[in-house]
Length: 95
Image 1 (cartoon, rainbow, N blue to C red):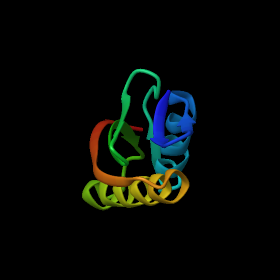
Image 2 (cartoon, helix red, strand yellow):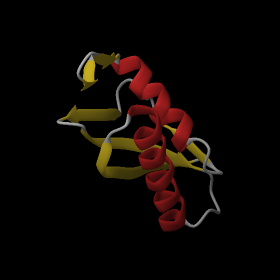
Image 3 (cartoon, rainbow, N blue to C red):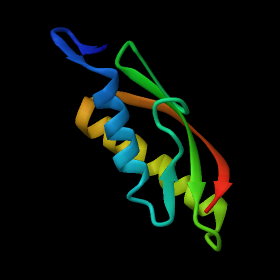
Image 4 (cartoon, rainbow, N blue to C red):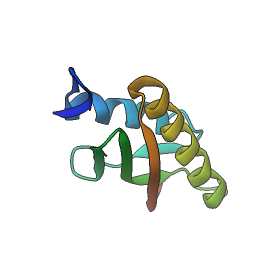
């Protein structure tokens, strides 16, 4: 469980769901095994995320990665009121 603000706690599962849903809004993206390959660190009202992706063959990988970074940062910033200091994306598989 992560503390986002005084009196506000969010479970790791809820944070994972926010990240996965935001990332998978990008066309051609699937988060690989979110329970094993997704890390959300929250401290002092800031967050850093690391996740592994599978991307459908034919997509431009740098564009997909940037799209995921932007969507995840926006979702966490909006829903959790944290400043996202980084979204580290690793493309591990072509689907």
